Amino acid sequence: MKITYNEKEKTLEIKDDLKSHYFMMKFLIALNLINAVLRLINLKETGFGFQEIIWLIIGIVSLIVLYFFLFKRSTSDKIELNRIQRLKEKAVFGRKRYSLVLVNGKTRNLLGFKNEYEIAELRKMLTDLGVKA
Image (cartoon, rainbow, N blue to C red):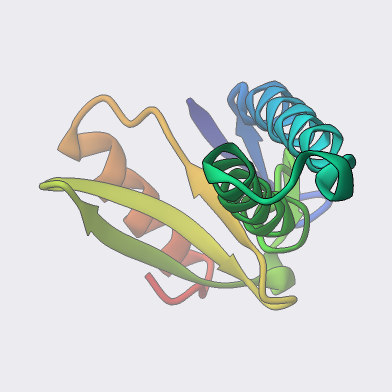
């Protein structure tokens, strides 16, 4: 991952493959949701059994996850500096994950840091630009 600051446009440019990764995730989740709906469409004829309960749970979980991917995550490659609220650090299973919290309530995940030096460099750059790190 490469993060650079464009002084002309006052934007952070993030070069990673997050957009295509998220597209594939959204596609698979939507496919899963469609499969759950198709399985539950004949509920009156088949009755409500164990398989229907499982597909109902899968459908609800898929719907919730798809909502978060569509409305709470951002995949922007260029983010204006005034739209960034802060850098967020979160520990998940002992690993630190970083994301940018945007003013509109969305988050932009930052994946692919190789070492602590890259993270320290990002924090320094964001602090110099006036973003709460």
